[in-house]
Image (tube, rainbow, N blue to C red; front, top):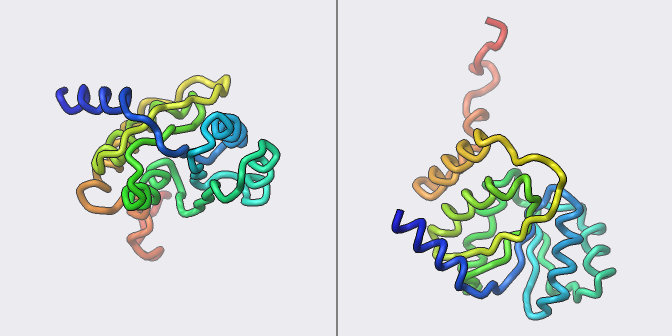
Length: 175
């Protein structure tokens, strides 16, 4: 409980140094471009978002200098949105970011961010983008929270566990 309270205070009192957009909806990039105009000193990272041409167009149309834009396509899911960038943020001395994702996805992103970014002392301020959808099922949050803990402990996210067995040894689902 003390750790959670400490992280909440750190998140509330830290000044973001960058914007992190979790890919998955074009509205997130549009929202980020508007926020980036309010914070011209911040670089923008888009983790596995739209195709590069569209993302560059969104930010250039908003008047953003594209030298501030970092498009990273290594993530394959929400957990890897964080694991693929946490070391780079730490190496650049980034201690706090604005976290931009859809409101229905924010609970899961926040849990994962607290675990992965928190393990490296990086704070974030959630910036939910309205989606009009209900929150994701809690099961997704619990599953990905466990995967984030696994990553902190082992450096693996568990995203490839189903690919460990060769096809000839995979489970027969017809039994």
